[in-house]
Image (cartoon, rainbow, N blue to C red; front, side, top):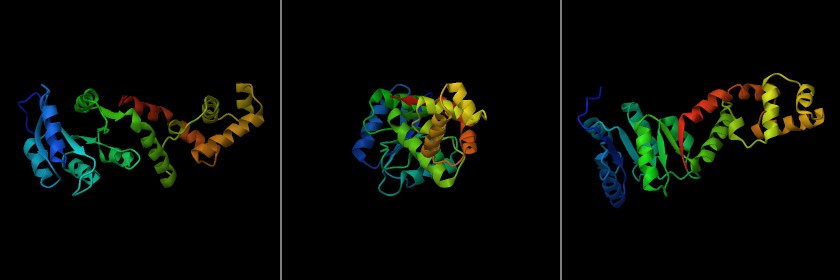
Length: 235
């Protein structure tokens, strides 16, 4: 159990293997009246002991560590200290699996070119218990959700993560309600042939095989939207 802290500041352990960056980020954070870096380390060695000693609110981890992978560090921290929130820095969407970091328990991300305002906002929002994702990482994350769902045949909602036309979304809605192609055609004032073409395109985009699968995914839409609403997106 964590002890009661006397400080009202957000306490942070910084893991960054570049000394210049580590000292620079530390100085930047410590200038804030409500934040404090209680320890800055270059690698994950003795990190468990350091976290046990300082009991930080947040651990900031540089994405590329020379001695180990930051994903392994995240998993170790969450395994030992479930309540501590983690922010991963300098994430490069095209080269790393954001989805794996989310699954491992990361609460926030900052990208390489983040400005100080967004950087501090990310820290504050994560400290408040929110999930934070820069807008530039949304597409890479959703692409990986889609790939994972397809590769592992998991019942994840794909509709919102794949580019759909307004008409295709309408067709999906009626399929979920159990309507036939003829019934959908009547509702949308289109020909059954056009609806059949839309259904074919939907199946192709979602990599599905049957209308039942489309309906199953569509029924999860509300849960998916709620998850997005619970995530703070930074421009």
